[in-house]
Length: 154
Image 1 (tube, one colour):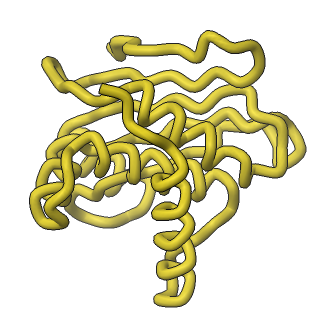
Image 2 (cartoon, rainbow, N blue to C red):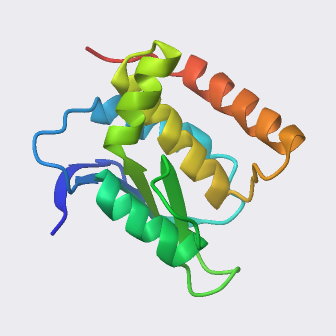
């Protein structure tokens, strides 16, 4: 069962973080603020976007089931909306262990890598792809710009 960590206090779309990984610590406010900034690129109304922090085993299962690929990945986005015209109902799964490995590789704090993955997932909900080198470069530039706009809180 998912454990709710945070909910947006404002009216309108719900942005929330849930954790399936005991003891995981992320800067929820920063992650959610980055996600809200990224959601400005979604052209439809947003009902909710939920972020689920998960482990490698569950992420590998999701990756295999929905993408047909073996092994874990860092982030998966699912648009659960009833139709392309209805409000966005999104779930974004972030593999915490993979985020830790990537944070070490890129020499950034875990909270920053986790927020980057949240932004990446939201941009996928907005229709951005990363299936070609040019598209990957475009989405990464946009991630960087969004992350620079938000200041982390202590």
